[in-house]
Length: 190
Ligand SMILES: [Zn+2]
Image (cartoon, rainbow, N blue to C red):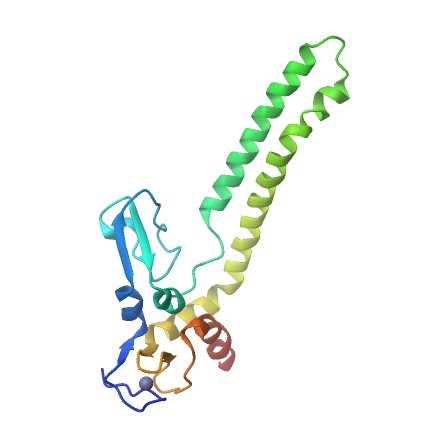
């Protein structure tokens, strides 16, 4: 690669950032779900790897340099729905048990189970509402994300100075500032 580092003005230690991320990412078979299609831009999906269950591990450098994932995860939303379902079932069962007791009061039948199910209702709602908020933020960010991805794909990294930079722009930054650079600095310039 013939891209000079803006700090040391040499090109022998310069690598493309997507390549550095890939090099710092390893997979092994395990019991972890990989991101589904299009959730994380720079990660191969389970289908692309040809296997269903893998554990991914990354070096700190690869974590810093990787393209930021979306806010929304289907997992959080599903977990929220499961919690709500569990809460509803527990509530129903407890209501029935109380209702079968001697002269049940309807307020008691409906409200007393909240002592036990309240936590499930609460966390369930929190996850579901939170994931809708995250999806909204993703929609707002979508145009910026496309620009950011284009910038990210062209980034380079110099191992000698531990800096990342964009060829032609020449502003070196620490790998941990990748998100700020591609979303803040570069998106703000256009
Ligand atoms: Zn350098």
